[in-house]
Image (spheres, rainbow, N blue to C red):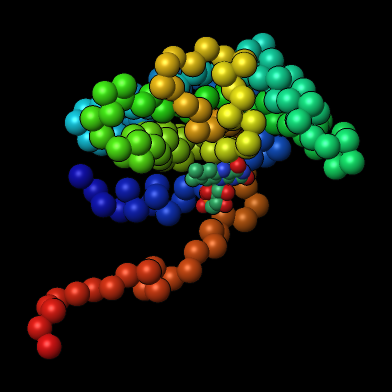
Length: 195
Ligand SMILES: Cc1cc2nc3c(=O)[nH]c(=O)nc-3n(C[C@H](O)[C@H](O)[C@H](O)COP(=O)(O)O)c2cc1C
């Protein structure tokens, strides 16, 4: 194994948004690779809590209709913005596919819920890094409307939506530097607790 390869992929991973997509389809072969890699995420007690719904073509556009309608019905008329409503719809139209990210709570509660959210997030990171490796743009969106997604798509008992992964091919992204505080401010190296 080559550590430069993983470093490059991790350091170059970015959120790439629908307005940056070029309209060409992300192939089902690549989407299947994303899903296979998601499935290799670590999972306590092997509960494998990640669940995905891959929306393409008319189905993803329908999600756009649902989300924009929901924005309309759930927003105070004083703060409602037609521009924002159109943007919600447009994001779905501009994407090649949208993966609905869900977490299936283990019905026996064999692990705490946070561990299942953590595990699902690791599955999403596997997909995100696989997108980077394939020059596919994507990002994780977590609007408030995910709480109502059960009105649009079937969720099993204990299944909860954690967001949407928008996917699309892109030609180039302008600024690829990511803002992060230094890791040194977040780490303590401890050799000994002796005084
Ligand atoms: C759990 C989660 C939820 C996110 N939700 C949103 C979101 O709702 N809208 C958004 O624009 N970006 C969202 N993001 C993407 C972050 O904004 C993005 O990762 C951050 O700005 C850092 O940029 P980078 O991914 O290019 O490094 C989310 C990321 C995570 C991990």
